[in-house]
Image (cartoon, rainbow, N blue to C red; front, side, top):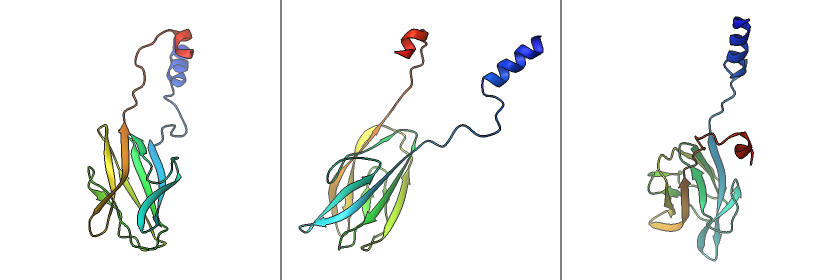
Length: 142
C-alpha cells in the first residue's frame, strides 16, 4: 500500500512524463519599416498592437525575438542601444531577426541606424513574478 501511494504521489507531481511539458519561454514580435513623407517609421504587424513607432513590451528572463521587415523605399537598420544589438542593413523587401535575453527591467530606446541614430520608439522590459504564498484554495481561485 505504501509503494502504491508513493508511486501515485511521484507520478502525480509530474515526475514521469513521456514528453517535455516545459517550453522555452519567448516573446515574438514582428515590425516593419515604412517611409512616410521622408520619415522612417516602425509599424507593428505581429505580437503587439499600436500605431507607428509602438512601445514594444517583453519580460525579463524570456527570449525576445524581434523580426524586422523593410517595407520602405530606403535602407534601414534597427538598433537597440542598451543591448547593443542591431539588424543587418536591410534593403527594401529584406528582413532580419534579432534575439535578446533581457535580464533587467527598464525602458530602452530603439533607433533607425543609417548614417546617424534616429530615435523611433521604446522597448519596455518588465518583470512578472508569480505569487509565492498560498492564500488558501478559495482565495487563489478568485
